[in-house]
Length: 113
Image (cartoon, rainbow, N blue to C red):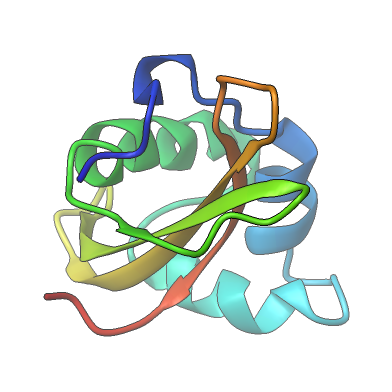
């Protein structure tokens, strides 16, 4: 199953630039090291956003159970960076109850199917 309405997915610039790609964020810096090794960079955060849209949102997702807040979707797939390096990545998306646009939650190194 694909994430519903993936074409409307929202990816917050700050979540990518100031967290996942930040080498100074107390928690995000560990993820940043991984994403930087694939060729992504905070000053070009749009490349990671586009890669997630094209390479992940087009893949099957595991739907979590619905809650009063909405439903979480997890995608496990290979992500290819700007340098051509690739690695398995897990991305997490959330569709709120009553909403139709998925929201990017996080991504981290992980097993691909």
